[in-house]
Image (cartoon, rainbow, N blue to C red; front, side):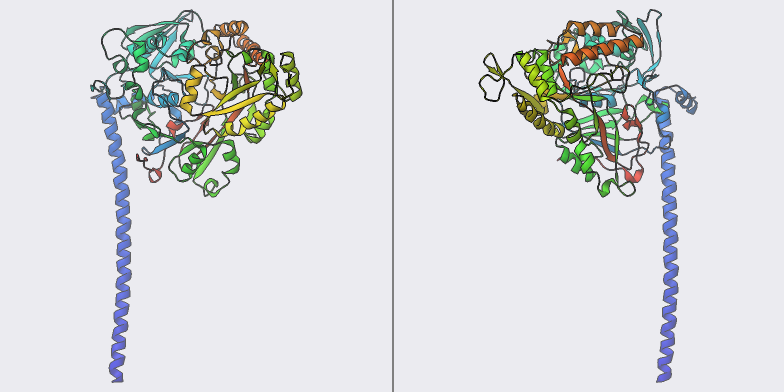
Length: 628
């Protein structure tokens, strides 16, 4: 019996050993199969990418007429000069999205009649201009839609030669239902743009101010036209080269002459954008988002400037704190941080340089904030009053407590890092006593000892509008209100939704406002400050500033090609505004950006972060949100 048990034990041990050996062999076999499968999958992806590239090349050949030449034509196109090509990463992977949070929706998508920053930004993705500024050296222009250009000896006529094969985005007319496909951009589309802007019936006053001295466009052929100026203008080059085409087949799809008023009120067509740029307008979900998708027929593909990201989305989130939480939950990919958020809320694991999935960027912003006084109101027509009010704004405290030091106090309308800004002009110091002195000179005294200044039976009281949800305004205005009261001035604060706020500004139905302006690299002050714009509805001179000396300086600047002389004129204009104080200039804030950290080829240029050159690895590409 004992021998039998020993025999069974030996047999069992042998069976276990066989099972273990067999299991190990099976595991190794499975691992080998898995590794082979992964290898095959990788090879398949590489093969699919190669097939995709071949398909793109074949599409480009078909679109642009190359048959026998094939790859040689593409190589030739890729060798032609085109704006900012060197900044596109040849290793970029196509696909993915970027969702950018924005604080307010807009009234329509027509940038010719809607001067809002969001709409201008969206048009920048959806359409191209004749030339672009170099990302690193913005004073230099490089060709985009234009193949080449030349300037006459008298500096009045630019001759433009267009590239062939540039297509408008395909679309279905929302009114007629007609489908438009493969329509080529031609010289007439640039003439249509200029004619529409210069038409007095269109609500294009802000843009029209830049085209005052542009006489006309003469079409030579489908691919050549002349831009003719009435007289020399120092911004004629940038204005000409930054011209966009306008799709006549969308906005003038009816018989008879162009109707400017219909253009303003063409609500269905003004809810969309038809461009010729890298991204086409896909949809606008009111108060939710605007979605742009990469245009698969974009002419830039064959020149090596096709943006990698498939979607650019503007997600409308009005509250900055909600934006921040949405960023943390990966539902948006980029937000503009409030200064308070930058300082107090980014010291969390999500922003850790090594392990976090978010990154932040800070750089000087080409913008400034201000308090504007409606000079149609009798209360603000005396410059002593406006000077006094500026003395009652403690900008040092605002910079420290509201902006957390993330900006600079500014005194004028030019970008602080250019020679046009007069650095010798110092900000008015905060001084309640100086303000009282100036107000007394202007006739404002507390005659009944109630603590409030009065004059001719009227108390010194006014209302300032703020934008609902703007954190910096919510924090800044109570400080100013408190300091105003120290001098006997009553300042009421009313918060308005953005759409209502803009309407009140455009109709000049306000007393004081607080907002900001973005600045170009070279500014023409005409749009904001010339008297000719003061009484126009929806003009950028919403405070109705009028000054003969300012008009003269502005007009001299416009025809001055001597940089040193133009700098001198800008300094004189800066000094005049500092004396007149139509604005209380506040802070030139830094741009504070928080963004998903997995984006590649993220570069900060003088113009900011250039989204169109960024890309995402395939395993980091997230889906678009769905409508609720």
